[in-house]
Amino acid sequence: MASLVVLATTAVPDHLRGALSRWMIEVTPGMFVGTLSAKVRDELWNAASSVVGDGAAVLIHPDDTEQGFSLRTAGARRRRPVDFDGLTLVAMSPNERHNDASTPAETIWPEGW
Image 1 (tube, one colour):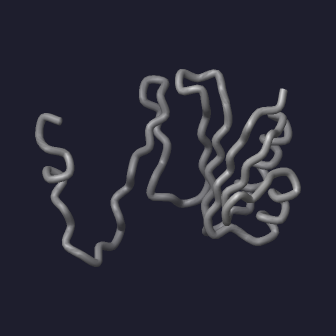
Image 2 (cartoon, rainbow, N blue to C red; image 1 turned 135 degrees about the horizontal axis):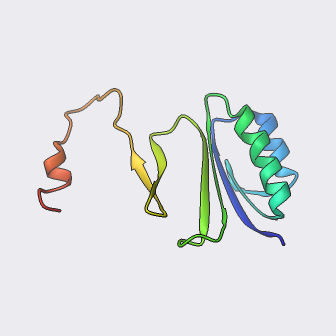
């Protein structure tokens, strides 16, 4: 059965965007939406994740999870999905370079929060 799939890309090769646009609609630059079977979705993801290069890609599709969807990522990103007791949460990696003064963690997440 076909289901709604969202695939967001950043700084990927043009030929990947062209291949994705054969199966999905590019609703905004780098964001593709389509109704795909699981087989087509998996094949597109395999193709996308293998050529992402220095860019990044995120795939979201319905699944039998507590949240009702699954998330896949490829490429280097600050945000990475983490399984937390069956829920997918997004962890942020710190910036490698800071151009401005850093905000202490206590300011962002007060003690006891």
